[in-house]
Image (cartoon, rainbow, N blue to C red; front, side):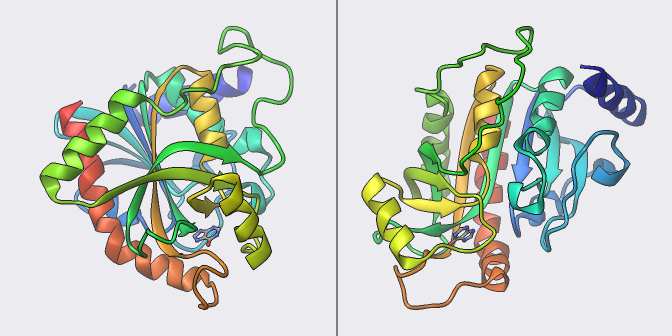
Length: 269
Ligand code: HPA
């Protein structure tokens, strides 16, 4: 709590107490989202109690801005478990956003497609997730003023936001896919046998983030929607070898589509 107060005091001082209602977390290569947005940028490294974001393709800044007439805070890059950040740190910004007044969270990431009907460059909206990271961000003493000890996760992704995404995608002529995301710790990409197993478990896409953030947002009773940009086929789905460079390149081209979808959704909220 004291840590949160310290973070909030700093952000309030830097932004003249800007009160965002919407937060967007941008994954690998999705930094283009901010190209036409103006506002107050703050480096993570300057924010008390924030984690470390060291991955190429992640700018490591918060942007406080307006999208349409909505006040928003954009996370340009996230904190990953595989960087050595405990999940509590990875999800700390969600608690900060809640305290700033955020009601709706948009999560994005780059992911590998497991479902063979999906194409590289497609956008997949989460219908649900499987957290296979082997850890949970809510482990530890619970603060009952924030949320319940055993929060329900049966409808973690908010139905009205999914409907809004569908309708908005239709208007924009975007072929929006829907499926189950499986989160692993990384940083190694998966083996072919693992991907086969995840497919049997019911996963349509695989990545190394997002589920912990969604768990904390659900715990805090925020409305949540998450999208994967399918930057490659997962191991063994195609014969290609996986590389972060490929992930970033596909992120750049196909990412624009996802940015347009989210901005149009925000304007309608
Ligand atoms: N696996 C895990 N994470 C990923 C992938 C993948 O194939 N692509 C982008 N992020």
